[in-house]
Image 1 (spheres, rainbow, N blue to C red):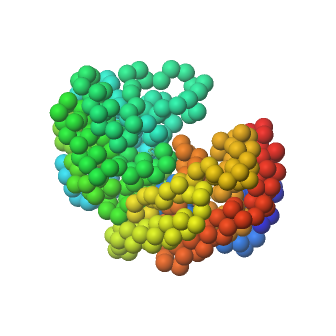
Image 2 (image 1 turned 60 degrees about the horizontal axis):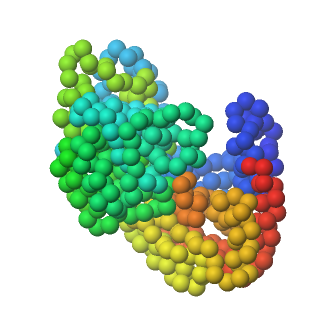
Image 3 (image 1 turned 45 degrees about the vertical axis):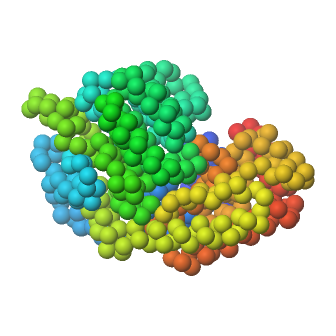
Amino acid sequence: MSTSVASTTLAYCQYVNPQWARLLDVLGMNVEYRRCQGIHLTTTEDIVLKDFLSGYCVHNIGHNHPRVVAALVEELERNGPAMLQSHVPQLAGELAARLCQLAGSSLSKVFFASSGSEGIEATIKFARATTGRNGLVAAKGAFHGLTCGALSLMEGSFWSEGFGPLLPDTHQVPFNDLDALETVLRSKKIAAFIVEPVQAEAGIYTPKEDYLIRAQELCRKYGTLFVLDEVQTGMFRTGPFLAFQHWKLDPDMVILAKALSGGLVPVGAVLMTETIYDSVYSSLRRAIIHTSTFGENHLAMRAGLATLDVLLEENLGQNAIERGHQLRAGLRAIAGEYEMIAEIRGIGLLCGIAFQAPHGFLLRSSFEAFRKVHPALFGQMLVRHLFLREHILTQICGNNFMVLKAAPPLNASTADIEQFLHAFANMMKSIHHSTAFWTEALNIARKAVNI
Ligand SMILES: Cc1ncc(COP(=O)(O)O)c(C=O)c1O
């Protein structure tokens, strides 16, 4: 596959983010795409890749689903009201009603935004308004977005370094640790516990069976709101509409984004209880106390409605469960043969392959050599190998470089999963039984030294 920078990317490099293009170049992934449809990405050289990343769980219905594209075209051709900011956007009402019906539980109002981070920011404000408290607690390793409020929930300096002071009175506790959570909640100064039901960028960690229900009980006990970030886990990614439905939870707020509008229009949503709505929008004077210009825009709303139709009519939640079982069973069968695979984990089509340092001397010295260059280098070599050799797009987790993520669109077929398993087995063979993977990686490492 030719991966040189095409002239059409020059403007991007000059005017947007040359470092991003450079990184893709180093990884050998700077290719141009001609057509993206379903799970398939076709390059200008007519190479067809399979997408096992889904834009970090944006493309639950696959790329450019014809029904959502048609709904958007129809909406544009209608020449209806858009962005008047002076009328009641009916589509927002329709979409909110469907989201609340599908969510069940006590969630009965929706605030619409244009991204996941914006949804997180809203939950921080709403939780403070409802409880009269300022404190926030989140789980270690979580990824909630890169705006200042969302960043304040995340541990470690990588994402926040150089960006100045963040929100005070924020805490992080280990995921799955109820004692640590209770210790923080006991102060009764915490407005909300914000947590992903299945941690995605932390390394695809599923909760212990009773963790979330007991965390919810602790929140109720100490007057803290229980808030679920379902930006990656929502929209049938793990099987049910929302992951919390696995454990029959009753959260105070849920954040959705990414897949909600079929990957075609920016969107975000906060589902909340009546009590929270009443605390924030408590009078006529406060009718627009928290809004966002593009929040209820007709294209995002129309795309959201069409996306729900596709997810439900094509029964993609069930397919996520079945293909997820197939994927993990296949990966576990392969994993047994290789010392570098520590664990296969996940739920539905949110799957993680956790790697570990090898024990054998030869593999270990190569592995350590380029871990010293950059902690993400090994993981990125896996991604690069799958991309260039096997024509599969994946990524490693943003906060855990030793976990490779496999999260294809929810309409992935049995054959798509088989192709991934075959590709993965080939890669594992090269890692363990040939020197090519490691020498190539060291050449990349040399180029990457300055990253
Ligand atoms: C779990 C989770 N929450 C929030 C966000 C932030 O969403 P956005 O990038 O749309 O602001 C992300 C983004 O990857 C996410 O994975």
